[in-house]
Length: 153
Length: 153
Image 1 (spheres, each protein chain N blue to C red):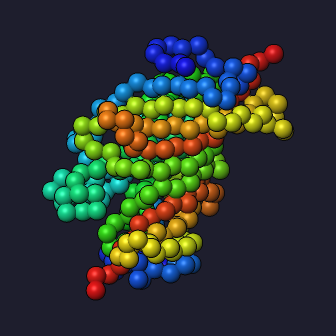
Image 2: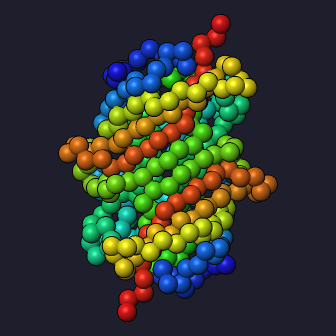
């Protein structure tokens, strides 16, 4: 399990199924939610606390893509892949909305490692990253295909 | 096919498999790429044009989540769902990186409509949204589950 500052950089050779990585924390507030949504997801339930009360979300909720962007920031700092966190794609869902005052943290686990057949220097690492709030409620589930590279010979 | 300003608001009753929606355009530049990545995906290939040259991306590339956030902005303005664009989750991939100078636009198509069994006022609309640049290259493929509501009786 890796966390904290300046962990050793990991290559494909160093990764194993079941390995876990814990991120730091990020406190999200109303100002951040409104700023992100105004720019990228301008809908009243993300930008206007008053209007949000009468909406599907019954109160201000962060854009799911804001939760994802903050998760990415936490991942970049907690997945010490030698060449960075490079995603080819993934699956995402939001079991519940992110609210002002939530403290986000991410736990990632390696599910599968598939060496490339055509390019022996790399492989695809399937990871599952759960984003929790301070009440241990799951805000987001992300299953991502990440690229990792072998240590050079 | 819907596009342009102030289209009629659509309820579940108005949607059909095969319906398409075209978005407006967004020009992405180096400044936007660096600003987003500095905040949410701080890796040299997204924040530093010099360092990016020697990276996997061989030049500055937008964070995939930036491409997604800009896609969401274009979707909010081009999918005139009556209660907004509310996603339960989805699948995303990036066939190629988004570069400074790319002009993004999104074409969305309804793939499936599944009325809710437990809640007759709503349903899940499976949509596929492709994000293109000005050369018609596909930058992102998103398959999303969106919530839509029936017109009130």
